[in-house]
Image (tube, rainbow, N blue to C red):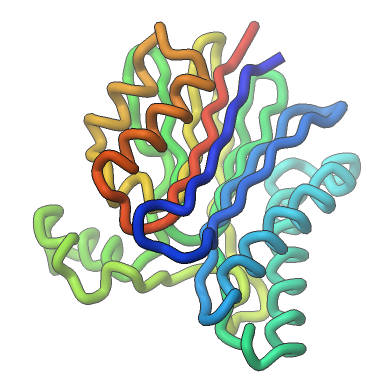
Length: 244
């Protein structure tokens, strides 16, 4: 049984927490999800909470009938439709939306799907790498050579997403990958409150330290974010693979 821990924190500046996360164990495997909401009033909170709740309700049923890729994108789109419907029902929630990154662990494979800029990182064979690629304007500019890594922090486009739940499109195109995993590997799911506050090296150092339990990892990642005056909400889940 894989080891798992998660934590969310409002951060140093925000008045409410627009992040949400969920962890459930089912007969078929472990499911983890992180969502980072946006929208005026309480929109972000409502959107992220709806995304996590709907996704975790829907995915186990779909996994009984569909391959993981289709089950996960289907569950994500159920969440997307629920958010859009709530938006239509309330003027205050009209512009709400959320990112979503999820991992479903099935024996020796981690199935990952995401929309937005919440990320997944993998520690495998002593190497720590980002396995998702942000759905954002800045990422597109970076890929196209319009800006450099050093210019990202000062870009006026840094918070603009190219993909999210609750947006105008009827269907969300989730990016999916099947990642083989082995005993001792660790997967980190997180909102951008973490990655905009701590460097890749700082995150890697915490997750890669074998003396840190998964509980230690989530505590330290949040603790260090707060120590670095994180301006956003911060949410992390760490899973350690056992026995494959």
